[in-house]
Image (cartoon, rainbow, N blue to C red; front, side, top):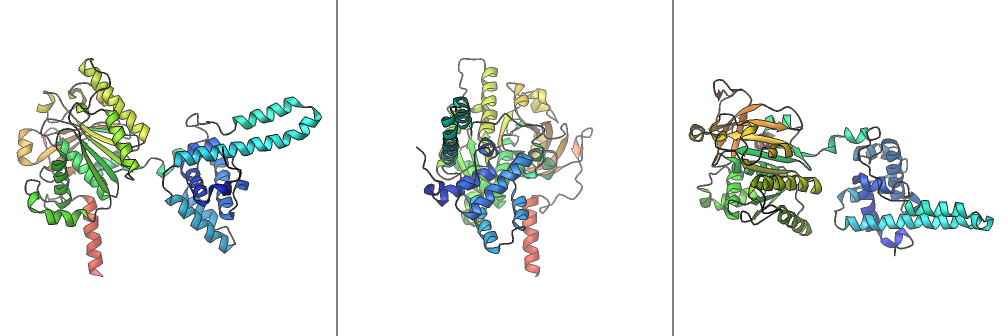
Length: 454
């Protein structure tokens, strides 16, 4: 049973309603025809609701923060303007805790208000004996607020398609990849890196996860091959630049480095063949319940998960695991990186193509981004390798990049001038200690330099 007035729910509840209306288009779509600013007592809340509805009616999506900033400048009342700013700040800061409950309760409240209005309007119709009109009013009130999401409406959703923030991508440590992936992989994307055994696939995942943590994201790293502690030491090596085989002697350096990291990392170990995608999903939910909401998921590696359908051919099991992984990424709106093996023939190639995927060729079809890392025995000695873009839903593919690879710290440097015929690359700048530092670290060093120069 819903309460009779919105003020009875309290200010915090109303702030969460506004937060959801500003950030969840589907929720706004479902209730835009039954919500009214009259339900709110606070003048600032009334203004925000009016602006949301006005913008939705014209552009069929939620207004951005920039739009609201411009509209705020049109308000002559300084006191009201300040109040609206404070309420908007609270709305954008509001957590997602209990959001499903808030949305459902507010939807029911709006439906009841519509039904109340229909019953009040029915009094005159009842006196006139117009029962068909009464039935029509009540039926419409009961149908109000239902699910109206039929998908992306092409002619109406132009604004949604062209918003810069519509696809929020988590970048890789390498600008050459980011440029062709439209910034990186985003929510719902499944990225896969192929390689031969011992070729540096797991270190690539460390680099991807570590870079995301440096950018301030929350990362969950699932390991089905290595122990949690050792994976943790690999991240220590990545963050400090100290080789993993000597990292145990540098505990104080590790503690100093990681305390300043803007993001957070959780490493979870499962035994090969014991965990399934359902296990991963349950653990992610546990993290969310404990106020750790992941932004990026890493699985090392998907092939070692257990299929929900046993007693089938191995190819069918692998296809099922990969489909489930892609489904998880879409359902939770999280990007997922993982790795996979190539077959014996692929392990001998300078450039690994899509037909060398071990187990099932359909892996590439399921993923959004597929990259191969080729490292022959000569590369392992020289610290080199080749990344090849096998598939890319967000741009061109078929490109090959030479790489300088340090598998003691997880630092990779890519070059875009790989000579396929010569089988090597010529860096456009000298390979030295500084050039192996990724762009994020380089920017931090430059910033520190300018601070000291003042």
